[in-house]
Image (cartoon, rainbow, N blue to C red):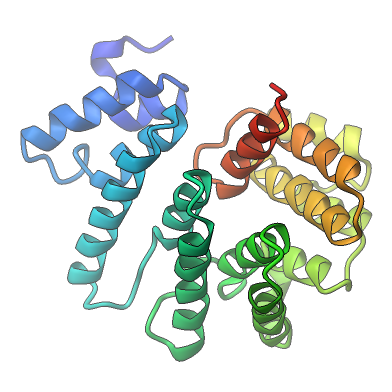
Length: 253
């Protein structure tokens, strides 16, 4: 194991030493270090620790700095802000944040952030709309995803998740594109060995659960959420934290 004194805050975060990472980010911030003191890193540590109000505050600060630096062309933490708001129980606020992210991609005021052209915020809004039983939000998400599905970028991850939400991909096809195999046990083995595949599998299992919720199969939804949360935290995927929240809300661990 790397000596703690030689580890950056990011090293600590990726080693799941969240409290140490938060303290290190705060220390570097006090020293004015623009890299190791970045508010986005501190916010991620707070999200890992369940310190959600702090996470929202510092993700907003990180967004403000990014927008100032890039002249308003990006809002890289909107999905994470919406996630933290949702976990705080502020569902309407979270839906507004995610809708802002979707609409910003559509009007060109926000950089989309993922290779598929902005799928991440669309599928998150789909989840929020379905779970809150907000028909307008879920329909807005699906309409947005249909627009993205007509573009060539949809072939890139997380594009398959948009196609899955639209009923154009099966679970097996999504697993194949996520992990290179179409069977769940084999996909989990691949995810254990490869961080990128684990990130993709977290995304996939979460939306398999959302599909079951759409179908009215809540127990099957919870099973997928449990399986998603059981994977090692990949740090940057909103879906893992939302699955953690789902498991906690069901009184499970």
